[in-house]
Image (cartoon, rainbow, N blue to C red; front, side, top):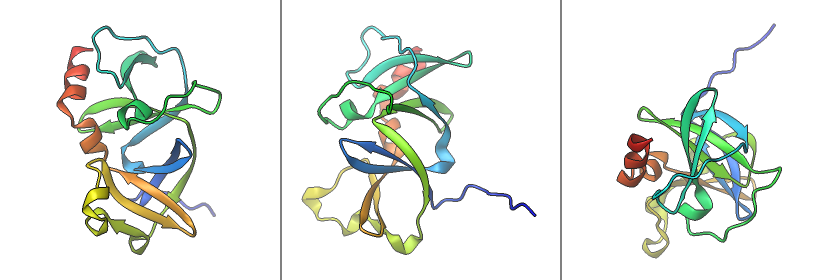
Amino acid sequence: MSEKVTATDNQYVLFKLDNESYGVNILYVETIEKVMDITRVPYAHYYVEGVINLRGEVVPVINLRKRFNLPQVEINDESRIIIVSVEDMIVGLLVDSSSEVLQLDLESIDDVSNIKENMKNDYVKGIGKDGERIIILLDLKKILGNTAINDENQRI
């Protein structure tokens, strides 16, 4: 007897950036790809790594390390591009690694309104707790809803 697994609002694709755990809602994730050839785009914003050809579709790739002003590292075998679809926009997110899907109960997620004002970040939707592990849950609509990225997507 097999059970059908369905994506729910409280499942997150986890990834690493600068040794911190981040999560994005699985409902936005199309696929996770190994890093492929990325073509630079002239005059793109500093955090736009370039574009990839994903099965015949040109997809812009955002380097989340650059977007979050984290120190840059070399792309390696662990690096991944998480392909997400947000409001009819398909974008790749370049991350250090991606390893699992985690289901978090609502009780395990702290709203950012509980975070001190000086620690708030517009891109953070919540803070998830899985045992001792802390997971920063990102708001993709705010990260990708920026007009700079929308402009980039329109240009490509």
